[in-house]
Length: 217
Length: 288
Figure 1 (cartoon, each protein chain N blue to C red):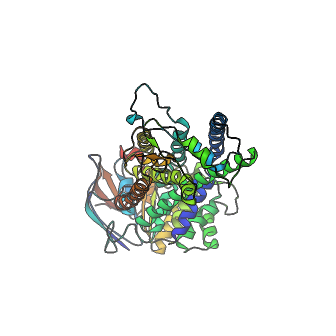
Figure 2 (figure 1 turned 45 degrees about the horizontal axis):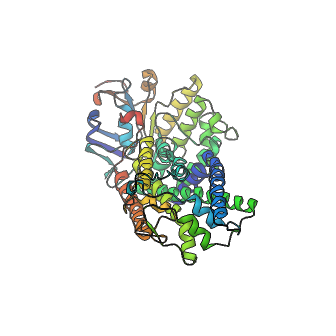
Figure 3 (figure 1 turned 30 degrees about the vertical axis):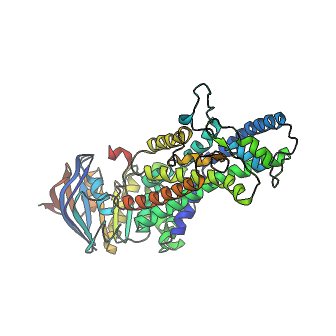
């Protein structure tokens, strides 16, 4: 998978949230987005996910223009801001419901995804009774369960304990090894540096610097 | 991708599990009791001793009012149909924020898996009609239960009583029914449903442009317009089942109204589909 952002700008209510971003992203790589709150990390993720449309510029996913030839990347798992599921059913049932849309995953795969994030697939507890950390883990499980080519994780370690953080770090590494393109943000820069091959620093919607594993370029 | 699965999920979450629907039978009970009181009063005055029927009850519930703006005599006060207003405003209130909330929460997970924005919008349109139908069915079933409890007739319709109940205008000249037929009976049952579907579709479309509460206020405005004006575009008058040309000369034309509602529905679906193609899916806080 190759994602190309050509001079992408997004303006919301006269406020430039993403400013002339040009990037090329490849499979088998973890890209970290780093910056202060409100600098445009999440908006950039939303643009790549197809949730918002660029005001100018273009986003190409494997050569296909997002918003024209594609509404959303064809194979994508996403966890953006706070995870949100149906409150009245269990985590497993939520994932099974989501999995049934594309019919790509079996119950065993769903169970395995839940186990990977450290939850119990047989837990009958309803989602609304989950703790914040459990909700976050389920959000990660939903993003990875269909083994997507593109995984977007916005602050995946939010509300997680140290074990949870390690689990997420391992999952990101495993997904990268599988060949997925992973884009991740995290307020803890040390975690981001641990998992990312490339880190883009963002300020005022602009990419100000690129830091590769091993140094700043 | 299976659109039917999205629709099934929406129906389950937005209709079957929607606790706001519990209020429908309660609302209906108030409507029925008030209608019963009026019907009994009219029947007593006209010395009619036949059983009340379901259709008569519906005629009274969805009676509505003269267009207040057309009142020829300012000395005569047109009674505002608060209960009629309550039905339509509540019908929209039940699901007024569902699509918006879905789009900023769990719906993102579904939407990104559907691959096509227009498929998601169309599935929401179908859900909108199902939820409108569900509200109306609950209302009608509750009315039926009220009829059974009170020993009212379900299949018998008195033209005489319906004419008496309908003949309450200071604006139009009354024509009345000469006989009851299936089309007239159907119009009494279906016209409010058409208005509810149309209002819900407008509400859903407006939610793409403004916050649900603001779009709901616009809907309230549309319902009020139907109480004030009898212009063809005051389509909510269609929900006043006797204030039309079947009963009154020069009143609201129900066929025109039905076509206008149909056109509004089609326009909402098309505009929604085109606009949603370029719609930014972000939480309200990020839009400000």
